[in-house]
Image (cartoon, rainbow, N blue to C red; front, side):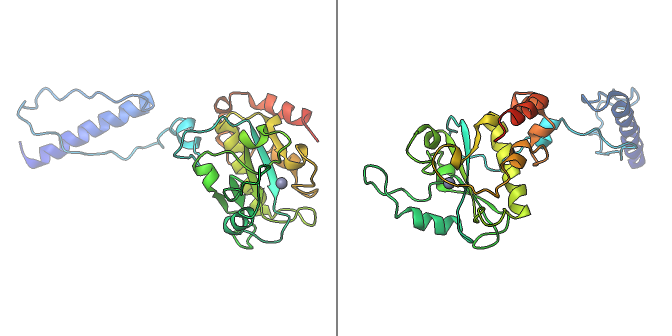
Length: 252
Ligand SMILES: [Zn+2]
């Protein structure tokens, strides 16, 4: 066999593979029988990958959209709520809030372990605008210290997200809004949190938090926050339409 025969064989196999792809949609490996004239001692076929004449079909949706960049190493807690907060300050970061919360004490007088939230979203003053940073409580899947002591359930099973800013005075930046929508939708789908479980701090204790200019409606009704739930309702366990209806029914 001449070296050029290897090339011809490779081309023949490549065309066979291409045809199998075109006909079968590349859903299963193409089986190409070896030519009968090929000697059994033929070395393994040269690798020849044909350039497809048509674009490959996209991989299954779940492979490309099921992304949770905040997946913790630890076993996840049994989350039921997402509680939204603002810092009520113009600037801040995970570090600055951590330092501040270290000064706090719980009911029994024990100092807090540090920052009480699970996530902080920056506004460009102290942290990047729209930057999402998980805290040690998220990484270690610990309870929060953010919702008040009236009902421990919200700290035990509530993911605390705090946006830097005072939303009594001005709304979140557009980057923050986009970030909080993505984060909320991702966590909601990943941990099967109902729309009714997404609440503002003021829903569980006497406070203005997260501020009258925080667009809770927009966050609750978002369908374009970059979440896989938007295109793969099965991942959320509930059809998208009924989620939308529930959003409206829980309007505040
Ligand atoms: Zn709050």
